[in-house]
Image (cartoon, rainbow, N blue to C red):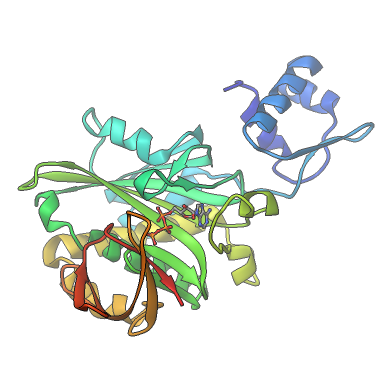
Length: 324
Ligand code: ATP
């Protein structure tokens, strides 16, 4: 990563034109250095307009992440949390998974202004861009083992919906096991990776991507309908406030989950389930597709579906749901 790229992007984050000369003066570097740093930003997928006589400009203004602003929005739970903000990471989950075994404490959040190699489940990709999405991961340590965490991804969904509803996004719904939808379009995704023994203790890295304002170029790379907060909300949602409120809700929900498991959150989850008691298409890992009707989710997060073969139970990760 070119050391000057993000300082330049900070200057450009106001969405206005900045001449190469002014940028060079402000950063005390040569114009060639500015040019090289801009090229690096473009290699990272950031769209920068360059107009002769006017300078450089981002497609639109961007609010960059700021550790203090995030902590201010967390409120009382701040003492529990550690928040790290990075300009650029390939994947916040990969970064945190590598750090688990070293020093990182319980309840550490790692957020990145730009994530360039975000992951979904089963090797799928999570598309993101500067200002286009909020991408972060939260490390949470559990005394119990991984076998007791089957409803964790659903619990995380409850925290997301609570936070989004508090910003007036009351249309946000959940799709089993862990996506957030508006209508049939995906607004946010969750990827949970576990480390530790089946019997405990264990650590979960909870990766979350929320679309803020997806440009067409990113939308085109997503092979299912996607939406963003800019389309869902009349007000601009500040990503620092959003992340703070998400962390507050995650802390509350995860503490509850530690004590009572998913059982106490199940009714709330069901209330927000996009496909509760509806007909669905199920995509199986071997490429097969089948149809069924969602009956319910169980207290351990297992999905119960009525199919032509009778009632079937699915663990998180065994199928992907699509509305029909
Ligand atoms: P499941 O229903 O099992 O969660 P999924 O297809 O949603 O399946 P995930 O692994 O949860 O899969 O998420 C990765 C998928 O999400 C990608 O394959 C792509 O279809 C979609 N996707 C990638 N980036 C975005 C994004 N920024 N916004 C919405 N959807 C995205």
